[in-house]
Image 1 (tube, rainbow, N blue to C red):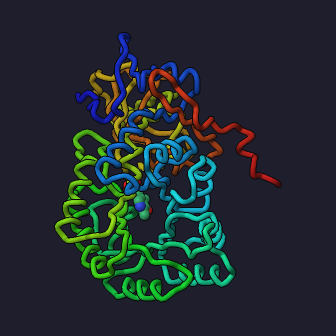
Image 2 (spheres, rainbow, N blue to C red):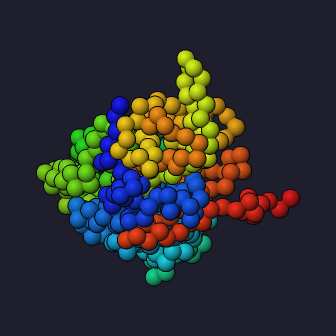
Image 3 (tube, helix red, strand yellow):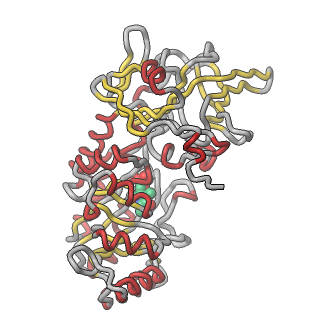
Length: 429
Ligand SMILES: *Cc1c(COP(=O)(O)O)cnc(C)c1O
């Protein structure tokens, strides 16, 4: 049966003489021994190279990393050092970015229901853009202006309006956001977008600098982006604003046989489309997954192997839906393999499950793994660098795994494993 397609592994992976996988020159068994399992292992150079590829494709100052994909101080710093701006979607994400030393002026604030406090903090800190999502949010920005809340230079905040262009991307319903029936943004089709532009232009509480759209996440069809660009260009060109933000959403291959456009191809499609349409605004994008997903793998330890003859085999690992909720949320597929046997045939089909107290706690519905997979084996799941750690939880009071950045033979802990005391840190009862 199929061996693992090594293209699903991050760029800087190799196999040592004894067959053990290395990431950034670090042996996976050593990383597991030092930091325990489960552990998120990031190939730091891969992350940097994706940032550089994005900047190469779109230009300096035109790539805004969507931090919700994966955020900790080390990641915020890395993205900023590589010339990216940061898209934050809450006061919490802004706090972490600023705690990493990223200036607010390099952050853009998203969110369909930003609180007054989040807006006040972001505006006074001087975020680059507030991406305004609703008329109610405009009311809040007006109220803050009446209270004298302004940026560090005394001026009203620069705002970008989030437009819902009515383009449906071919992706999961919960992560497709550009269609008319959406909680996000001002609908183009019903005239809200035009009303929002008129209001923002008249307002003294904000300075309208551009429009934005995000058609969805994990989009594999470059043509979906070209379609959105076309609809947005029609709307944006007559407005003659300096900024056009075309969102994120570039898909990545998670499993065998998937093929996603590269960052460079994405850039070519979008920028060619914009040029052909006559867009004169500065075009920027907000990739999240395409930067972070393929940079990491999660390494678990196998705890039980239960064969039910004629039914199936269950393989349980020491994590689960608390470190990767995507299979449960979206039915997302992942590959799995043994770091000690990267290129071995994987002839056992098993259901890979976690340790949570529910049957729905599945990491892979039909994982292909080597037949000799045994209790105590390290088991790795690639392409878990986006929306794993960041969507994780403490369900069943399981402590969150650490994050390790590997590069040049050095394994650097950037987020430690939670302790049992961390579980009580907010419990004041
Ligand atoms: C989630 C999101 C992104 C990033 O999406 P990816 O699929 O991770 O690239 C970019 N922009 C906005 C507004 C988002 O909500």
